[in-house]
Amino acid sequence: MPHIVRLPVEHEQILATLQVFFSRILQQTQVDAMLAPVHLPMKHVVMPSLVADPGKMTGADPLSPSFPMNSAKLVSRLTRRSGRGRFAVVLRPCEIRAFVELVKLKQGRMDKVFIIGLDCLGAFSNTAYSKFAGECGRDATTRFCNHVLFGGRDALDGFDLASACRCCEHFVPHGADLHIQLYGGNVRKEILIRCESDQGSAMADALKLEEAADPQDRAMVVNDLLNVRKAARDRMYANTATVVDSIEKLTRYLADCVNCFNCRVACPVCYCRECVFMTDVFDHDPDRYLGWAERKGMVKMPTDTVFYHLTRMAHMSTACVGCGQCTNACPNDIPVVELFRLVAHRTQVAFDYPAGKDVGDRPPLAEFRESEYTEVVGL
Amino acid sequence: MKDFEPTVIAFVCNWCTYTAADLAGTSRLAYPPNVRLIRVMCTGMVDPQYVIKALLEGADGVLVSGCHPGDCHYINGNYKARRRIKLLKTILPQFGIEPERLCLTWIGASDGIHFAETMRKLVERLTVLGPGETKLKMVI
Image 1 (cartoon, each protein chain N blue to C red):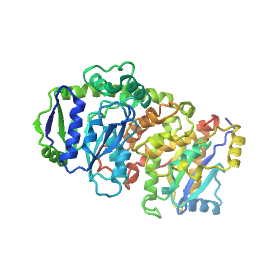
Image 2 (image 1 turned 90 degrees about the vertical axis):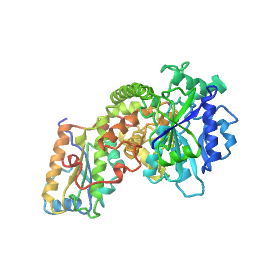
Image 3 (image 1 turned 120 degrees about the vertical axis):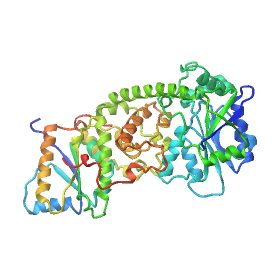
Image 4 (image 1 turned 45 degrees about the vertical axis):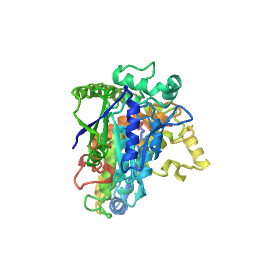
């Protein structure tokens, strides 16, 4: 351990091979149900679904560029309270990292869940995916998959990856029990699966999967993509930093915000049942609004927009994994993820805490030491 | 900016710094009236939100002040406060809020003189720094 096993691919049907693999897991192992992205029968849309019937796996589609929500929150629902079920969950790397954060925040448990991670091919924004799936129909996933793995890094027919994915360097999953490798080798012939835990190895044994070796070119392929992504990320950090470096500029950046709080609803690590911004604390009396308007001359309604975003940064920037669902959820196309990823990056550097890396780490604001950060004390 | 009088919001803990402020008062020590004290039971209850709100509403500086390390009435509240101030001093300067506008100090209950001195120094510093951007620009 870790060892590598192989899934032979017939007729270059990568997706069908994975569907059969998932249904075998349901049939031949102790797993009761699997949470995976599945095509809904009524529309070309892929949604995380909990599948108990192996026959339903024909709709599974973990390779689609659809990413309607971060499933970490769903895994939290499946594991936070005890039940009889044993779940396998198919997750993108950012979903695994978000779930790791939720486990640390006591919002889920690792022991009842078997994690299947995939090398992430990236995703489109919700609106772009909807258009792409509308144009390509049933071939959408195959076309996307072939383009990312064998085509190029340019946009596919004008459809580019979501902004969060374009600067994501965490496309290889960490913390999965089984890791389905897509980069390197030739996935048209065989898919290699790395067993990254004892549970994972036991599953591979139970399914009688053949041993294999890492393809020679994998390290190089992964490294090349890593360099591209890191360069894009650093450009994004630099650009974003300059457009928000004063309160006036930050206000301009957020000017389209209507306080719908969709970004916090979509955020996998904003776990509060009731956000303070939804409570009576912000249910101001008319006289308070009048007071503000009189004091300042005018006040934008609803109020507290910058306050909300800055507070959210203080509350979750230690745990942000940069999945981009905040941007996906914004009705007014504010590039939320760029701002939050930049701030989260700096917060996580300040506390030497990479979010989502290790379930054994303690969140920075959940612990303290007697002698530390003395530089922030004093005038 | 000769007429500029900075506004300071100070979150002070009941057991140490507030008591020190009380002592400064009963000892008739003079310190600038620019400071609005908000008594909290412990610096460990100062949510970063309070600090952000104060700064956005036009405070030129925010002070959080409590017991010395090891002296916290609730054992470790001041250590939690220190981490939160570290967090805020990481986040806020990215948006042009100078880190000098946010201060954390430890002032013990018997330190009335130190309290008055700290207030003088802080107000002096903020006077030099000038008004915060939030006072001059519209914040949504």
